[in-house]
Length: 112
Length: 111
Image (cartoon, rainbow over all chains, first blue to last red; front, side, top):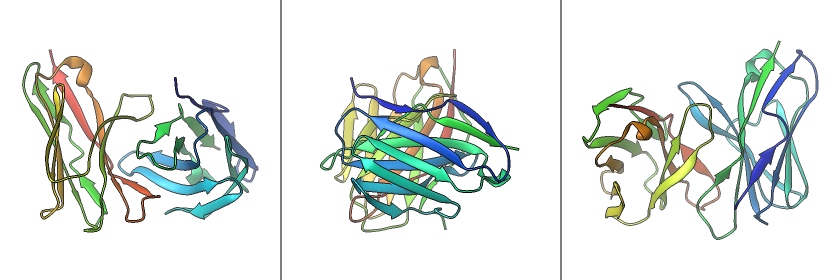
């Protein structure tokens, strides 16, 4: 059974803190994605990675960075959290030839 | 103009009826089209994909694609209360790496 896991379901941080969100997949997928989901705006792509150490900006990369040192792990970093980064963060993975994305359970981040 | 547009709903249908969900997209070069279902508090899961013009059926679900009109739809026959969820339309951008999601349509199926 395919599985994408995220390090936390709920997270509360203070403005200015550095925040790490971790995502791990056990399907040997090449492609991994980070989205944020906000009411009325749907899923918006923050960053994606098509291979180890490779990363591409999505539609809303400002204020975020990513790291992919190993194939199975893709980390999202908020360098200095701000209140407008309060959101649901979803990680997904997809194999190189596939089209379906498999999503993790999500991390609901609140920045106070 | 949003790249993938859906009516946010809510769409309410009685149990046993046909639910019709619609989606339009802006990039004519798009090749792959998807419908994801998202229950409240859960993450999206793929229920249908379609690549060619016409209809594709899978059980109670039918996806319809009209590339000339840049239009994708999802029909759910014999709707059940368990179909109540948000349905996300998604389109792969040309090149295939990025997937653009619509904001979703909330569906309520009344028992």
